[in-house]
Amino acid sequence: MPKHCEAVLYMEDGWNPSHIEDVLNKYTIIKEYAYILHDSDVDDNGDLKKAHYHVYMNFGRSNATLDAVAKWYGVRTDCIKRIKSNRYY
Image 1 (cartoon, one colour):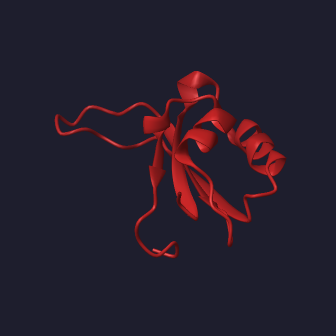
Image 2 (tube, helix red, strand yellow):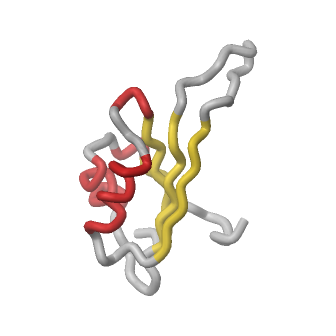
């Protein structure tokens, strides 16, 4: 169970800053968060990838399961990733 993780949420699924913050503010276990829109990423062929948000969540001294975080956002568990490095990087 990680103390911090990242969610990848796609604009085409209705995610926008207001919707993301609604979820982030609903759970008191989330102590710190940040998110950024990736709308200029290209794949190996040079094609534009689907616009998406990366949402970082820190749980302080608590832990949350990846399954629980996925349920908060209504996404598959593979859209939630454990952060393995120092959160400030």
